[in-house]
Image (cartoon, rainbow, N blue to C red):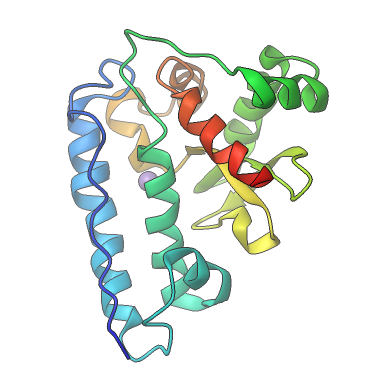
Amino acid sequence: MTQSTFQLLPLPYAEDALSPIISSKTISYHYGKHLLTYLNNLNAAIEGSGMETLSLEEIVKQAEDSLLNNAGQVLNHNLYFSQFQTPDKPSAPSGKLKEAITKDFGSVEAFQKAFQNAGTTLFGSGWAWLSADHNGHLLITQEPNAGNPIRRGLRPLLTFDVWEHAYYLDYQNRRADHLAALWQIVDWDVVAERYNKVFL
Ligand code: MN
């Protein structure tokens, strides 16, 4: 059996590119230390698990316990870090994704309010998710700890990390302010690309 070793996702921007929404110091700890630790733990836990040949997504669907936690955190952070861009070129939902947001939430603004609320009211550590079902219907869920909606058969499109390590250096206890600011760096083209794959 070929041993799979997962690699650290290359950041699609410089460590200071998301400042001041997310500082380079937060990126250096969050990406360079927290994600790296999850990745190293995943690569250690996969040895002898019988899942050595599976994709990261399949591992998250099938694993339990420590392997699930570390694989989940790697997948979640890969989706998280790859959905941002510099704040100098704000983007907005368009096309099929915008139509679906409007249909399922009333408006982009109403969606953003509901999504932020999901992140703000999640007790403890976890993730707020926008996902699509196999028909393209959108829904917002809260997942504690390392949870990913892929475990419920949904396709994850957008996520806000509400673990304190994601914001405490920059915003201290002001989680809601951090989440509200994240809209300035969401790369909606990435989210639309994820959504369009539902229909392939
Ligand atoms: Mn995190």
